[in-house]
Amino acid sequence: MDAGGYFDLTPRDVASDLRRDTILTLESMGIGVEYSHHEVAPSQHEIDLRYMDALSMADAAMTYRLVVKEIAMKHGVYATFMPKPIFGENGSGMHTHQSLFKEDQNAFFDPEDEYCLSPAAKSYIAGLLTYAREICAVVAQWVNSYKRLVPGYEAPVYISWARRNRSALVRVPMYKPEKAKATRAEIDGPRCQDRHSAFFRMHIGILAWA
Image (cartoon, rainbow, N blue to C red; front, side, top):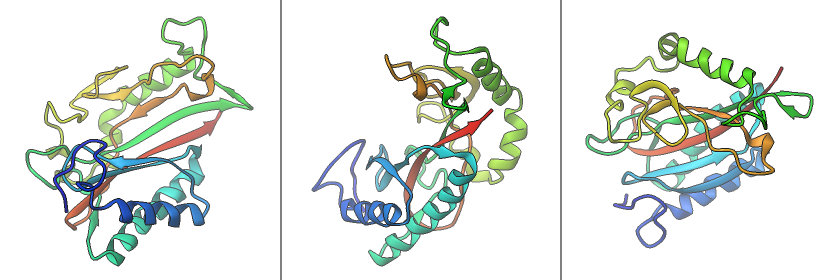
């Protein structure tokens, strides 16, 4: 569809209308969207869903996937969530942001810690890393998922955590002053797979309560 890159706008981003219609449809169904833009690879787009509780987000993610495909079809194109549809280009990942809340307080936040991470947050991240292989067996069943794991393409090639390095499986976004509720861990492991040709990418946020 295009040869656009990260955050490219019209006229290179010929899918602007498609992306806008997708967002409007999602919002009409009660699914909040925070951001959207063209991603790194040709014909690759990102739509970020606003955080919600884990069960609601699971439903929203499945609805999102169907809406993307249906709106793309209305525009005469196919949308796919295949992890690595084009050799030599950045693949698509489902970046899942996670945090735990106890009542109205983010259990991941600790203002006294060097990284503003509580013991609960560190244990949670340790669990994701410890069971990374088992998690992948569930969320990344397809061979194509592992074709994406190539250094240099912002794919999680290391079972580790980092703040800036996007080659790590778990990324911890840096704390912003007065944004304690936004303290979270981002896992770049989940993948979706199907057989079409143009592609989208999604970021979602999940909250769970302790």
